[in-house]
Image (cartoon, rainbow, N blue to C red):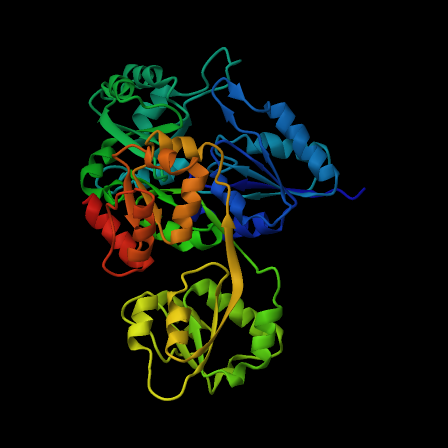
Length: 504
């Protein structure tokens, strides 16, 4: 049987945005992913459907699989002809046992490649506002393991050399041996008053940094409850953190915000919140899926030039309509004689993506806003309204009362999604700061997922409720929720701005 191939990939220190382009490409094309504890699980979203994912994480005294077992797993998977992405935290060749795995692969005749990753040794200090080198302080850097092999009878670390030759020292995996590391450096001649920092979960929304001196750091770390994974930085450059700290000063840093949108739609909102420092908890309450039949919209598209108006009320409606239009062999040119209305700037923007400039976009981003500006003069118009299967009826009903012919055709439907394991408990116990709702359907499904209105309302009072606009807020109030945050404009951007204003 033809042997497969193994890619030893460094996934970076935790921030998924630090994954290399090459690593991303491999994840999208591989057959199996074998990933570690420190590899951000959101990176698995890069894989295609059907990719096998195997967790082999190792924490102190808690090994899912031994290193020998991992080595054999890689050999077995590649031996089945699979392309394997071995996803490791940081860089595979910097205290990541990548060299050991590569040796085993070579011994078994398995082709492999190494894809370097950004190590936490440089990324975590950078995110903590600590440059490892600075010409006013030092030009030498040492990266050291804080956890040598337990079967060694004598340390291989030259403590005296490190203390005298290196201006900045970075210790990885050193929490358990922190007191001994600091003692060894001081006994080897390092000034006890040398600035030091411990950085936990560097580059992630959970990053936490404490500072002190080489002498005081063990007590500070214990008092502050610093646990693995964390790194120790020792050197005068640590003093620059006071002025260069940028990551932990972002407006939403340290806040856990729940996004209830469909997973396929949540990425843009998640990225914007994460850029502001938030930790986004994905709690998808809805899933967008096609209608049971395309027959109605396909028939309408065949007669599209017989319509006077085409109305869109959501991005999903726009996307589904144009996909069917293109599949029918037509393109945007057939809409030359049809006026187009779009509710909301994002819906209008999606229409423009397909080469059409909407004729009408109300300033009030809801059905009532369109009704207020929709032209009433002349004969009744023939209107096509592709939308969700279940939605508010005020727009089509009012237009019909005005004498228009309105064809309401479902081009997608929303169904209840199942969030990840443990998410309900996290919300019930108040381990989040804000829950966001962007549509009435997200509210209704949230209530069902939580176990009914009473249980849904039982979330701790400290958890704030953020609603995108009045229609969603009305649904929330129907279930007895209070509204803490509601923007003046009914857009994702405005909702995020309102969240920032509330936190500040």
